[in-house]
Image 1 (cartoon, one colour):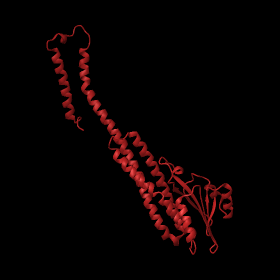
Image 2 (cartoon, one colour; image 1 turned 180 degrees about the horizontal axis):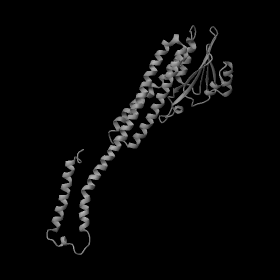
Image 3 (cartoon, rainbow, N blue to C red; image 1 turned 120 degrees about the horizontal axis):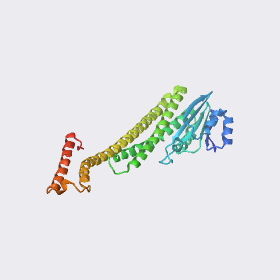
Image 4 (spheres, rainbow, N blue to C red; image 1 turned 30 degrees about the vertical axis):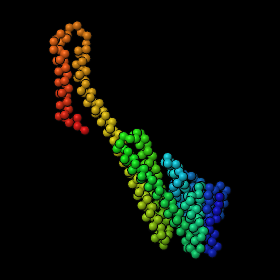
Amino acid sequence: MVESVIINKDTGFEWTNLVDPSLRELSQVAVQYDLHPTSVQDCLEPEHLPKYERIGEVSFVIVRMFDEHSSKEADTVRKMTNKIACFIGKNFLVTIHRQDHEHLKVIRNKWRIYHKNQQNLAFMIMLDIYASVAQTYESPINAAAEELEEYESLIFTDSAPAATIIAKLYLLRRRASVIKNMLTSLHEIMLKASASFVDKSPYLQDVIDNTSRLQYQAAQLYEDANNLLSIHLSLSSHRTNEVMRVLTIISVFFMPLTFIVGIYGMNFKYMPELEMEWGYAMTWLLMLSVVGIIYFWFRKKGWLRD
């Protein structure tokens, strides 16, 4: 679908918005605004990463907006985000995206009303797009931070299976990595864009600062998820070692007793201890003495302490 959002006859500015365009529609717009073929080809790639490049008098920008309808199990760029391609010229703006977004609808409705008597319309509209793209990541970052706190309280208890927590933490880390990388790319794009609009940099700086804040939160979330995953693996290993330690101690106590019982369980006809009056009591005394010696030796070595 091709939509003419703004046609300002006084300034000659046009904003054309394409939602899930066909190849024919995209080709017509490319010819109309003399867009570079390689940039148009990039618009057709659904997994294309964010970028900024300037070809002649036209700036080509790709940003990726978080998809609020994406699955909680999504952990890739394509599954978590929607691509928005923008061609910014002196007197025109072309935006291309496969799925419409509520934020983009709000921006279009806003500038349909306020585009009159406004200078540098392309820059001001892109400023709103940058701000909206960054804003879409705030909610998933906060939700992931709360989820991480829940996992943090669980790993120090045995209330949840270790394999389940590891899988969820790994998914959370992958999602945090995608968000962090998308915000980093957006930050770099805006820095490059500010170089082309030096006189408008104060307007852009506020959006850059907000993106930097979200970028820091996403990076911190990634590091916390990574650290928590490592701690959980260490605790799981520690619990396994504790179980093995207890089993080993029990085995050490019973190994010599099993040896003694094995000797007296042999069916030889001539065993002198079998005829002794105090043989049974002496055997018990021997076994208890062995257990006592092992116990005090372990206590001296500190191996029975928690």
